[in-house]
Length: 282
Ligand code: SIN
Image (cartoon, rainbow, N blue to C red; front, top):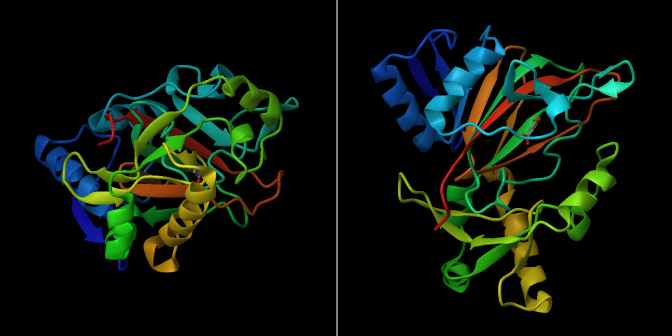
């Protein structure tokens, strides 16, 4: 197995490994360390089935069963289909998942750890995924800003309907998000310490962070806008242009991401997704 850092700030490509095969203890230890260090790992040319993706994902935390049952792979329900494809007038997967910058499941007490996407079918244009490095975003803040936010906690809200920065883009989305309006918000530190490396990173996103605990919106909203703009400065961002059979995984404790869209409804994109649960941010 070879791990080659990408030319930018973060991310690495892993080659000479077949994810169909069980990992050796040495490879697993190396991959787990590389995952924390590089934050995104990219494996090209993987011919795997959902059961292989699930087995691999389990090495990076407890795998979650997410989204509606009809969008999961029947004999492997932890694997969710993200797709714009319709069969008999029904969407076979989640449409427009992750279309605003976010860290997975941040409105939970114990948010997401690893997310693992496997590219099955790609559209003729668009369909990229962007990632932003939250360690560097924190490191490059001014000392005054670091000081200002050091003890602040962001309010994370699951429903798009209570967030003025986002729009509902998924067909049937309004009813879906209405049901989420009653789910309580969660507060997490704006500056999160990575539980393995100890590095500090920004932990907030325009998709989920709607306010700051104990702060009026008159003060909180401009501060959030400033931090959101800083997070996605071009020098903090890696754009992944998918190839079929890419498997891409990232550490939600130090990376924000978004699906870039940019393809037509009939131009099929299908991704198989697994995600694992992390710990309480501190
Ligand atoms: C996600 O946010 O989980 C999906 C990202 C993508 O489909 O590119």
